[in-house]
Length: 387
Image 1 (cartoon, rainbow, N blue to C red):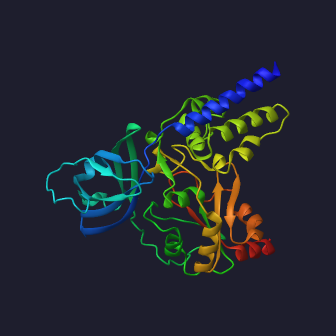
Image 2 (image 1 turned 30 degrees about the vertical axis):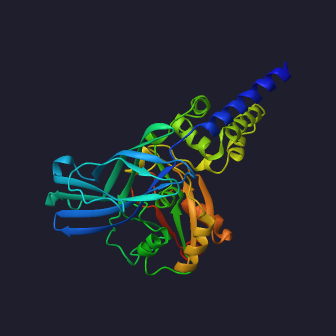
Image 3 (image 1 turned 120 degrees about the horizontal axis):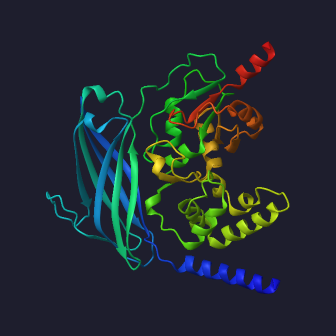
């Protein structure tokens, strides 16, 4: 009987893995490359450039449609006087076209194409101070051997706050630092340098949340771009409703990273060990991203409709940022329950002080826009001695 059950499980794993490997997806990836701006009072024009790359070695993929849906975050629709968009594919052999028409394009294997996106808007004077950012949403269709699929992407046009090199006005030893809404066009080290108080000390610790760092690395996916399978629909039902793996899209994201066999075996081992009072086995076996994935609503708008992955190369980031900025750097995951996870830091001996400083979650989990927190160990020690 046990042998039969084992064979059934083995066949199920094999079929799930084969289905995952043989399923054909679009190999196109869209990435923002840069932007320029032209501003005059309440009228603003942005010209952004995106690149579409075909990562497949043989497959050619067509793009029959490409639409841009701009959104002004932070203001109401009745505060918008006008908003216009213009899209221009930048093919070397493409003739200048003044018509609002997207001709179907082919992106050959291992090749890329660029698209210029122009957004011009005018808003009321009363809305200028409330505007947080411009979100450029993109809805485009991929067509090829996989059939056709509608893809959804988007990115923020950075709007820096006027807080460069400000001097701390408080004696607090834990200082949340407000930033603009971060995005894939931001360089993480440049952002830290821009918002770093000029009176910082080499002994200070600058922490950044793992989700904001991942967002700047482009590690987020619109849930509508994730085709879910049977395995993800089944497994997600066994997770706590507040878990980011309790939805089919969240679970499918994990499966797409590590494969169905690893995720299913991890779940099975986790279920067995749980019977003996041992918790957390699934997350230890399933891979680092199992703990780091944030499902939709888990991140501040306009990323609240995206699944945000954990950052890549966080240890290397901490080393480089610390060397360039001249203080200690840490990438952290903190929640309102007092849980502090340090993903990476250039100086591990600071772990205890980081955990104590961030237990109250000074950055917050809502829309505070304070992804960076400055910790001043010297002030903490001075405060302890006074007590």
